[in-house]
Image (tube, rainbow, N blue to C red; front, side):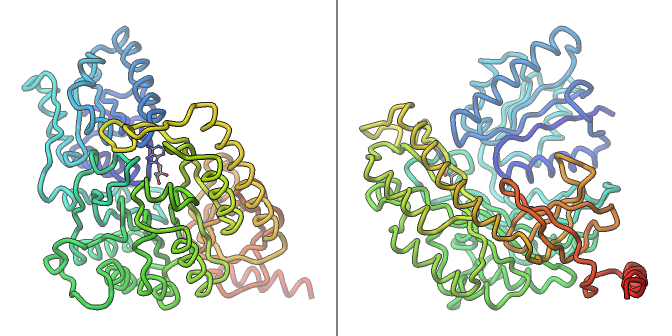
Length: 473
Ligand code: 5AD
């Protein structure tokens, strides 16, 4: 059977989609190639949020195509995801070596399309039409055949976005909001937990809008609680699941019911990714965000009242059309006021068919770059201070596995979503354990397992530790 290599650009939803496509192909007998150099099928799962992300994938495909044309002309090349959706057949006009273009509502048919191409039934395949029910069509995970069992998993709960922020291409690439049924989602969570998963991140382009349309059909009731909070409660019931996260929410979706859920549902981690985009009311309005600076600050205050150390991250766009120096300074002051634990800064990028692309007063590249640097300095300064303050404290982490950068170290996350590295071994994988923070790096904490805390140790380890403690007496 052929081997496949999938390279993923962009958000966690793309990672999840790639994983599901890989799982689907493995189920059909494909093997996973370790790199593109040996693969019979090379798929790039693309991102369209900024031009930079599109250019990166296009350049990559150009290089891959040049290489296979010379040495392995039978290799199948394909684009999937957001750029595939927004550019469709245009991609093959530009790169004629590409055989396959799979849109965002067609992922679950990838195996079928590859079969058509490899059997010679179709020469080129471009499939980007909408497909009713596609949000529920992908649920395969790669975990079952994985000898190194995953501790964390993503579960897609909804697709699409109806918010129509003026800068954003996502409504074009992911379509209208469509939500999966609660029972489907909890069944998938239960299955994952039975394979050893301890933490689940619920995914969607705007998760707080979960079930806003046709929710009674999705098995929910229309009460005071939003469908999203009802879903959180249902997932919280899954036995054996230790932690719940979600991304990305919209600040608008942070009603009292969701704020209150953080205090009430112990599995829900004290962490929130709250994309603010700008600190200026004028710009927020131009962006069509649907909240003001003061409403945003109010949500942060409410969340911190529930959990004073709540981890808060954000996305910010600098250089949105018409953003003046005074507007930008409002963003700087908001960053200082909130003291984000982490912020992803994006230089505004004109996206086709979005209202902002046609707005007057587009900001020059130099000014966007300069604002990016100034904001980065503020964000990094705050984070440095906040991370350094953890030194000497004890935190609880869920150990996910070896660190990507240095496999000799293990990596875990605190409930507030801070990455902790420590010297440990594979037997720690999947454990919830206390570590003592010894020092802080850039957006990373370094820890030592706190051996005197016996609560969270597995049984055999507990005996060893007790003996060690005895000897010390
Ligand atoms: N230009 C720059 N950044 C963008 N984002 C979305 N669209 C654009 C754009 N046109 C950013 C937003 C969003 C994140 C995922 O990407 O900050 O929250």
